[in-house]
Length: 348
Image 1 (spheres, rainbow, N blue to C red):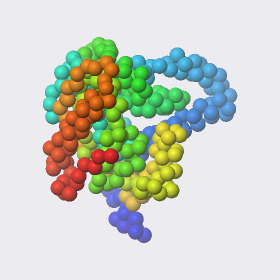
Image 2: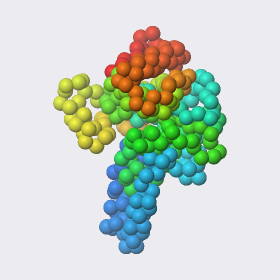
Image 3: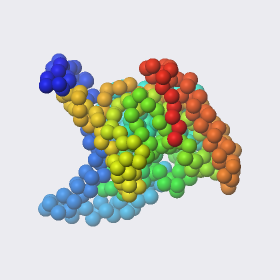
C-alpha cells in the first residue's frame, strides 16, 4: 500500500509478524544505542533519583569485582540461558528469518575458532545463531560452549554490559582469546566454539546489498593466535547478511569516509547512516529489512601448534584459510544468493 510515495504495511498483518517487527525494533535500539543508554541510565539514577542513587556505589563495586569476567570465559549458563532462550530472541530470529546450516560434525571435546564473514552492519546472523538458543546451535554442535566475541568496551558500560554478558558474549581482547583457546569450559560442556567476526567495524563500512566485500587480507592476527594454541579454524559465512541494511555509502577518500574512519579509530564503532525500514512502512527507518540469512558453518582447518610462529608461517596458513573460505562461499552461494553467478567475493 503506497501513500505519498511511501510503502506502508497492510493493516491486516498477522500478530506474529507484528511481534517479530517489534522484536527487531527493540534489538536495533539496544544494539545501536546500548552504550549511550547504559551511561544515560547510570547518570539518571545518580543525579535524578532520591533513593536508587544509594545503590549505585554497590553496582560500581560489582562492576569492579566482575571486571575481568569477559576475559575469563564470560558468564555461566545460569546467567545467560534466560535471555538466550527468550521469546523475544525467538521472534527476532524468525523476523528475517535466520537459519543455521551445519555442513560437518565437530569433535565435541575440542576448542575451535569460528571465523565469521561478513560482518555486515550489525552481524545479525552470527548474533542469532550463536548469541541465542533459538536456532539450536548447541543441539547441532553438542558439547560445545558457544562464545560470541564482541568489543571489550561494551563490558565497561554500566547496565549494557549485563546485556552483552547475558547473550554469552566475551571480550575481543588478546587476553580473552588466549584464555578461550587454551582453557576447557566448565561442565556440562566438553568443547568450545569461540565466534570471532574477523572484519569488525571497518568491514561494516563496506556493506551494501548485492555485494560481499570482506576484510581478510590485512587481518592475520587471528591466524597467529590460533597457531599459538594449535586451534582449528572453522570458516563461517552468513549469506544474506549484507541484504538486511543499506547505508549511505562513501567511496574511499571522500570526506564522509575519512570522518567515519576517524570516529571508528577513536571509539571503536563505525558511524553508519543506516537505510532500513520503519515499523509501519518499508521506505525508511533503522529497523533491518526482512531478508533471509543463512549462516553456513564449514569444515575445520587444522593448524599445528607453534608457540612463536614466524611471519612466513602466519602468511602460509592465512593464505590456506582464505582458500578454504572461498571454497565455502562458492560451494553454497547458488543455494542462498539470487543471481549467484553475478556475485563475487571481494577480498580486501
